[in-house]
Image 1: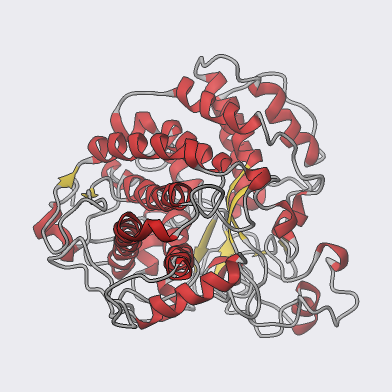
Image 2: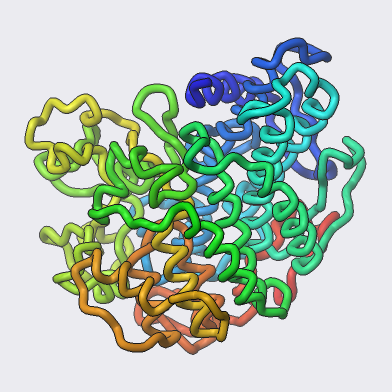
Amino acid sequence: MKLSKYIVLGAIAIASTASVSCVGDLDIMPENPTTKTEITSADELYGELAGIYGGLVFEGGITVDDGGAGVYSRQFWNLQELCTDETLIGSNWGDAGLNELVFSTWSTDNHWLYECFSRFNYQIAIVNQFLRDINTFGNLLPTDGNLSKETLAAEARTLRALSYYHMIDIFGRGPWTTEASTVGATPPTYDRTQLFDAVVADLADAIPSLVPASQQIYGRVSREAGYMLLAKLYLNSEVYTGVARWQECANACNEIRKTIDTLAPTYKYLFCATNDKYVGNGEILWAIPQDATTLTTYGGTTYLSGGSYRGDSDLLKTLGVAVSGWEGPRVREELSQALVANDQRRLIYEGDYTEQILDLGDKNQGYMCTKFVYTPETDYYNELQDDPYCNTVFNPTDYPLFRLADTYLMLAECELHGATGCNGLELMNRVRQRAGLNDVSTLSADNILRERMCELYWEGHRRSDLIRFGKFAGSAYNWSWKGNDAKGASTPVTRNLYAIPTQFIPTLGQNPGY
């Protein structure tokens, strides 16, 4: 089956579903737009699963002021990146709540928090409904292969675990629901440790039923992707639960290396229109597929390219985009300074802009990130000017959720914390060698955190990394505009967790300090 066909079918179902308020009913049962009460074919089940995959790509399902802003990837990216030393959106946009994210001064009424929590919860709800349906109508599916009931259920559970991982990381508490939960009943609220334990147990149980990447269909979750998600949970275990699990993280990373252990030869091609060649059984272990015609989104790489581009039309033609940039996310000076001139990962356009941002309203302050482009590997600088990948509104580049280079850097961090069997120093140097940099002789917290920034910037990991290294809230590290100060200022340690949105407080309670 072609994933794109079923994602489109699933998107229709999402778009037709009534908007979800997520207040007072934290286990939503999505309405079936066809009013069918019974599944009668395997294709209907495939379409329902595709709707879950499509939930990472498309808008719909939750109530937002701007539909494009409600896309899953855009929601979690804003909360994971705008509050860090990698990027900000200036006041030229004027969107409510963005300055609070940029300054780390958000309130419980910030609409980005409400919409993000709602998106995670909605995604979990449609997984639960699919699992109920597959338990009832699974006899319509093959008994083996990558379209079997067991395999599709494992994929859905892994997709659910992704949303719970983001909920754990960003909000630290939430409703625990599965396909066994009673629809319409208020589910139990789990704290961070309870959610972690429940998600890890369910994910670990699902992973053996996932299809290995070498046999999986493009765009669908592989066994290696499942191990990467499990490793991410273990990586942050000490933050989430107070108990470090470095060896478990290393073990999960090494499961990936058994079958996928080669970096792509050129860094910049991982973020161009033909990066699908690296997705699945390559460096990009898990991606959110996009294209310019059917898998279109105002989130994902469209947001990180066209959404961030500024400048004249000649530059935009080189980058392959047909419309004027939105002049949104910019590069903070700390990221620019970390990416030295000879680092091949420095995908930043300086132009006539300034590196420092002293006036958030001045669009000429702050460099432009050109990491995500519309152009293909074979015509990266759009010299032909007529490439079918280019000159579109929507970026066809897939959004990389997890990459093997991250796996290598995680093993370096595990080694620093005493885990065995990591080979972390050598693996971190592999990452550096691809970037054209010299090897480091030892591992330290500082050089690992810096390497993670240079390798993974703008990919949605920075806030979690800063928290894990003790550098986010407080005064251990202040960067430009942190705490609403151009030079950076201390923030309360309670900012290591976002606030539970006002609408959810009666059911879930609130995190300390809000």
